Image (cartoon, rainbow, N blue to C red; front, side, top):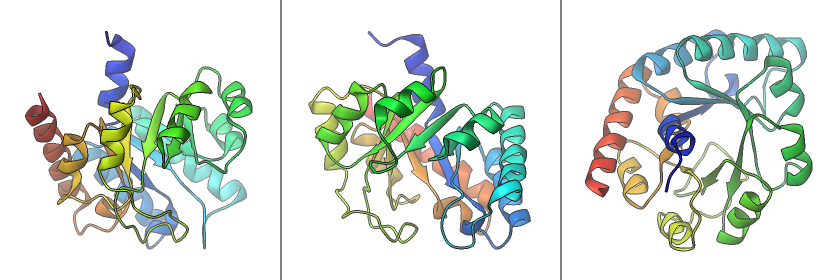
Length: 225
């Protein structure tokens, strides 16, 4: 039987926006897009400030604090990508890491009391992450993505089905190349939510994009029942 806490996490991960200032034209544009995405109904946000032209040091910390504050005010989960020190400094809700971001047993100890999300490309990786205490799995990349140059080969929605058929029962978030046009397929395959970057950060109207994505997710969940 699903616990109340797990069910709540599944809901909180429904529309998971991932972004950093590098995904926008400027730091202020990033903050504007985040506000609009929150207005549109995102349920979780991951601060992923890494790559070319990313903020660092005090500038990164101050932006993370601003983002965390507005997420907290609107009851949106605030997750930090692959930076334990930053997660602690801003008292984020949790941390998300990839397969090469450190030893999971150590990371789990360092994130006690916080959510821990782990990206997984295979059933083996997902099972190992759960063994080490992952609260949710970011499964993918589902589709081709240009946001991460080092992304692995897309695996399609079959990975979601395989994870579910192999008793991977923690909340699952599909990641990689997800758009309004294909988000419903990811949910129908068994995911609890989708993680997007450019589908919101690159939209002409981030609020409308978020509204439409969330509506598609909700309809797909209803169809799955």
